[in-house]
Amino acid sequence: MSPRTRVLPRALVVLAVGTLAVAGLTACGPAAAPEDKPSAVYRMPITDPATEIDPFLASNYSALAITGLVTEPLVSLDAEGALNARLAKAWEPSDDGLTWTVTLREGARFNDGTPVTADDVVATFGAIISESSLSPGRTAFVGVLDDLTATAHDTVEFSLLRPFSDFPLLLTGTNTGILPAGYETGTWLEEPVGAGQFLLEDYTVGVGATYVKNPDYWNADAIDLDGVELRIFDDMQAAALAFQVGEIDRIGLTAEVAGAIDVADYDLISSGYNRFDGIVLDVASAPFDDRSVREALAWAVDREALVDDVYEGNADVANDTVFFPDHVPQPQGLTQRQQDLDRVADLLAGRTVSFTITTPNQLLGEVLQQQLNAVDGFEVGLEVLTAEAYYGGDPAPWLSAPVTATSWAKRVPSQYLSLVYATGSAWNASHYANSALDELTAEFDAATDEVERQELTDRIAEIQWTDVPVVIPAFSKSQALQNPRVQGEFVGAVDFYTGYNFAGISVAP
Image (cartoon, rainbow, N blue to C red):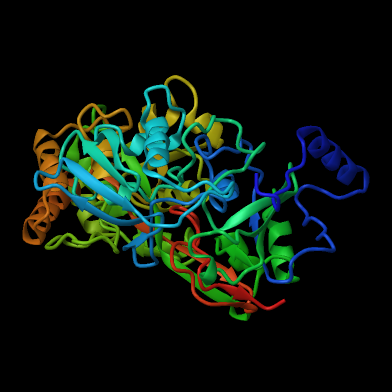
């Protein structure tokens, strides 16, 4: 552990939380700032991670933020979705597309002083893709990555099961921070190792975490902050109040926040798109085994209203394909779906369709229910579940309910195709099967020629749009409000789906 890193022993963490409770403080309120706090500290809200704090096990935004400020990926994405070199300085495919060679930058070190080598990369990804792995990042590599080998102290060869032209994008995942060879899963809080921008100074359960700048970070000259602070809020109103009084520097721009804060008083920061909420239809059972019924639902949704009422304008209308607006290439030649009640009537031909939407997203579910019940031919119920109930159980509701509304974080398009649309896929909640789409997906993954990729994109998107097993009405933007005392622009995402990059960010004391 770096001498500047201090983590409370577990017994003291419990004692600290108990002491705060006795003093009358609540976990959803801001923690008191130590007197020796560095002056230039960027302060962010998180929720209680409610999971083990470990880079290999972190499965939600808060846990990923806690570990990801200390660890460093090979590659990240910039605000436009382009690849941004981090621990890797170069990556190159073989002629047959089955091997990717990644070269590490010189001089990168872990915060215990040891150099980052190819052996560490091999050990990290070996642990992620292992059959016994519990890492949420494993799913990105299933069916793609076969093995990897260190061919020199600074060179790693990734061997693929099939050509995959977008493979470097998979290296940007939030669970792919490089750890030393020999790291033991589950020990990270005891010794929070990483090669990233900051050192974990303190983590207190229910309160938050504080960090100081890592002076040995490979890009330390670009890090102007003295530190970062994460404060735990379990109540959005408490977080909004803390933001208004200047105790935190940023807050996600949600409908609730927009209704409580004068947005014009703050800076709006954005870095592209972070998710879509797909309306998944079970095509193997009535009524959605009839494509005309699926099409009717797709034409019945008022997408513009969803953008306003669910996303507070922080989304773009989508067209039932998985190609985010910042992905290259974009589908060409499709008619943009919008609400068309005449077409709905023609498709339903006098039928009344009854079903229940199951989702953990109450606002989205309620708006969809209201929209569809206002259209002749639909009788729609709503079942709102907790995230634990929605994704848990056997079978899990998100995979077994007839109609679901599921949030999908931003991924490479072919990942959606192989996870959501592929015949027999474990996450194919629509039970959709199309051998032609499966073949096109494999061709798309292997293609490197721009003209060929455009043609394949158009054919894949046409199938998705025509068969519509999943209605994709909008692409949510990653946006937040920020205190004007913060200067500079974030190089990459602001919602941590590929890790924060604080290069060039500064704050007034």
